[in-house]
Structure formats: C-alpha cells, structure tokens
Image 1: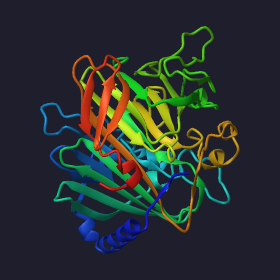
Image 2: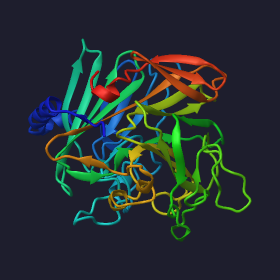
Image 3: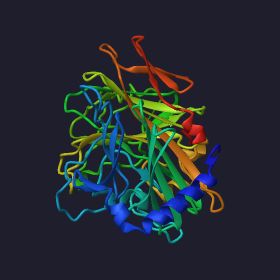
Length: 410
C-alpha cells in the first residue's frame, strides 16, 4: 500500500503539543461555543471553519465567505443544545466531517479491545497542539492531538486553509496505533427537503453494494428502502427492497423520505479518486479528493428522516459522503476478518505500524458553478488546479493543491 510516512513532521507536532498542553489557559482562550459545542475556529478571507473539541468534528464551515452568497455545506445535527442520555459519544457533537479510527460501530470486542462507535477520535476530547501561519501568512494551520487509550496511540489532526482557495486540507498522523484497522473520514452534508436538488458524482468505480446486513432496523423505529446486499455498477440503477419497484438513482438526492440507507462504492485503483455533490439550485459543487491506495471506498449514508429513536426522532436529514477503508460501518471485527469484499481482493482495513507514523491526507472544498451546471462528469487535474467538467460540457477551474494527497505539504 502506498501509505505516506512522516517522521520530522510528527516529531515537531509532538513538541508543539507538549508545549501547549502544559498551558491550559493558552488552549482555552481559543475555544468558542459554536452550535452548542466548545470549538476552535480557523479562518481567512475565504473560509471560516469550526472544529469541536469533543470528537474533532469540523462544522460549520463557511466557504466563499468574501462573496455575496457564502456556502455552508455541512450538516449540524438538530439536537444540538438538547440534554439527552446519548447512547454513544459520537452523537453528542454530530456534524460535518470527522476522522474515525476504527471506523464503524465496533459492537464486537477484538482481542480485548472494545472501541466506541467510530473510535475515540470521533467522540473523545482533542487538545490544541499548535496554530501556525506559513508561506508569508498564506497558509494557516490548526493542529490538535489525542492520545487513544483503548488501543494505545497518538493521533494528530491538522487542518489547513490557504488564502485565495476555498479548500480545506486535512492530515491525520497516526502513531503507535499498531495493527489492522478500518479508518476514514465521515463528511456529512446538509440536505434540503426538495427532492433531487443534489447530484452526486464519483470517479470510476469497481462496483457498489448496499450494506449486506440490515442497516435500519424497524424494531428500533428505523426504516430502509434499498435491497439488502444488492450489488450494482451504476449508481443511477440500484435495486429497491420492494419487489417490482423501480431502481433507485443514488445520484439524485434527497429521495425516499422516511428511510435511512447505507451503500459502499468501491473506487477503481489510480493516482487519486474523487466524489462531488452539485447543488444545482444554488450554483455550487462540494468536492472531496483522496488517495484510493489509502481510502478505497466511499460510504453513502442517506439519512432522510428514517430514524425515530433517541436522539433522531425523525428529524435528521443529511447525506454522509464518507471516504473510508472498511466493511461498511460494521467496525473493527468485521473489517479485519475475511468477508465478502476481501474475497474479491478489496481491502477492508489498513495495517498500521508501531514503529513509524501513518499519514492520511484528504481534501474538501467548494467551487462556484454557472447556471446550467447540473452534474459533474469528470475532474481534470493540472498543477495546483482542478477543472470541474459538467455533463453538459461546462468547465470551471479552481485552485486546489491536489498534490497534497501524496506529499502532505502545502
């Protein structure tokens, strides 16, 4: 696997972390309460983002903030500020994008390890490591750190933004968390109520598959619409659960109100992979870029008022566009065991080393598109630039340092 290894960067971050963590007042003064969660805020003229201390969830994020029509694409769960006996920690701040290690439910203990859903990185507290500005002040970086306890290790989260770009560059450096594990990003976008407003597109896929087990359990007041375990090669044609029903078009969202479904899309190998969501009524595209040698799948969590237990109560309305390596959202045990995907040569875990850090780079951003730009057909990559090409032939170029996926440097 073409994992990028970091040595000096991890050491310098550890030193910065040690200095700041011994000065609680220094860290506390940078926290603001945003949507009911203590958060650090990183901003420049183009972007303002909030990162929760609990779970490291990135949202709200305002892109194009220096324009007449700023864009806030990420979901913030509707129960923020409510007091409940939350069943799992990740639900408390649930919003935007967060890093999951191990990714998934983790219902089953493995070798004495019982990880919380989506891991400690998604539901425990992070600590401030550093704030830096480089390249003549054009690059601003917020770094936080967590020492995991269930499986001993250290994870450093870096979020960077660049003047003149509507892009967030993420890097997670994992140290000491040895062994095989599923992992990934859990980006969650807000959805309007009007059906078909979002158009989802991806780079070439090997195939897709609906979760092979029951994802939404009616016994828990949850309901799903797609056929359990259905395999497909075209996201526009996915079998429904009901005999005789027309196939679902997963590229057109929202849809199927009252249901919550989970689908895994497996990327073709290549230098990079991408996924986009075009909000055609507002004229913008959200996009995510990754290295498929590290994150080989995109999990679609299509949540359209389909869960009615606590704290959902039928209110939640979003789409998770989650770039991962894993066995759907089943967690560590299912992902490291032989399974329906590994039998076809698809990895469902990443092997981490205790002797050297693993670095996971990820890019998310927003680009403004003109009227008539209905759906992304493909992305073209030039030096420091990505061109978004629509199905109708529109072309929109934006500054994106996609080389970061391999180098981890800006």
